[in-house]
Image 1 (cartoon, one colour):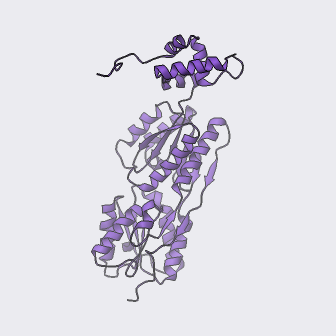
Image 2 (cartoon, rainbow, N blue to C red):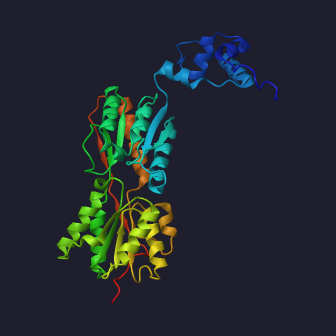
Length: 354
């Protein structure tokens, strides 16, 4: 057993005794709260810091939070821990929060998860300074909406990262970005390349959350005087295996599509594998376009055409909104809109002549 392994954790009183000062002086030095109002010499300050180092004293975060009213902790909820796009959002949140001296408490709440309401309720009762969330789990859960109302009643700052028309306005600050305009762009691009049979793999747990893409897809076909063939839209689950099977279904049609839109890049990986397993080539036989521009997209073979919301920037902007709300709880609710952009790479090309 190491020496001191079972010793009592040192306290501010221990630091004060070793440094020969009052406990209040230790608190002033550690928290930087003297501000010239309390005469603490540099020699005293150094003596306190030396005692802190000698005792290996670590301030109790819970006690600090009770004294200051702040935990320096921000809750973050993402819907899918497996999707790299949401890790980019989390990375942006963590970087911006860390720069401001905050820590992140991360939870993943998929929309269809049975325990989603309980996870959200548990998080709402924790001591956090604010909450950032991709609120897809809220839209079909009255219980989760009640929990959000409880948070807002407690005046906990809440920021939502969402699409323009996804769900009701819950009277929170929002970072808004969607793929409606970029879907029009990619459809225009595919139609200009001669594609007329364009499939859509709609793998999403809450279908309404993909309407920015689905509606723009349909409107583009109508504008081009092309039929809306229901066989070309496959509603499936949100896993790579789901998209793999959906792709095989589409490519098994008598008049198979020559291009595929896939609801996100993660599912586009399943589509690329299915196409390869059917001995077809991308983009010679089938063009593929995803969404989100996950880091892996440009390293696939072929490199994946996609659209980007810039998840990292969305996370950073969400933290800035939350910090502004902490500074001024009564300011009007704010929306920050971030445009998405289309990124054309190797996976889209002219429709096959046949």
